[in-house]
Image (cartoon, rainbow, N blue to C red; front, side):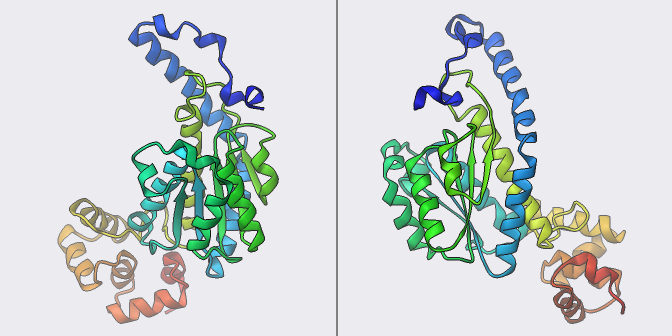
Length: 298
């Protein structure tokens, strides 16, 4: 079984890796990475289908949950952790379970991925239900932890997406939407933290970002729902307000403060010349889509 997986093949093109110079090694790795985006491009229809499924579930109160082991699982944790500051989502909206738990984020707990019942326990602890979507991430396409998680997700009626880096992946049979990115053999045989990991990160970027755009978290290409939790993000908020409204730095600072730090509210206050309470009501009426609120009749 393992010998048939492209991610586990030893490529002849890299057979003398150990006697290459450092510049040659870097050039080989860089050249290999150039094919990752091409491989991802071939799966954009499936990625789009996954986004539509996630959006549909979230619009009825559901959540996005990632499940994986090793590098794949850590990438799920990373994407989930980035959603609150980027899109001002609650920590519960996008979550991740990792084989081996929190310890596995920092130390390899490789045997944890072989336990098919472990994912069920992890997901049950999150009260996974029919409103949610589970995205199982596995480079090989046959990680028991991920397959166990997807089986459990189906049993409770949740939407299921499988992300793997081999074609005809075993895990695809457990998913409503199967994303199979054929990244091929790694420069370092079997080290799927390389091309496969890069591909997984690219796909997860697309899943979460496109979902949040469809949920109204973005205006134009600006993150108008960001959570300004540090100096950089506070300044970014001011800059975005200035870009949209044409305000000065001082005006942006003042209105953002009046709006309690909410970019959408501050932009509406300036563009429609209304107070905070009116702007908040306008956003509520527009289901929190800033463009709709800006274009609505007075």
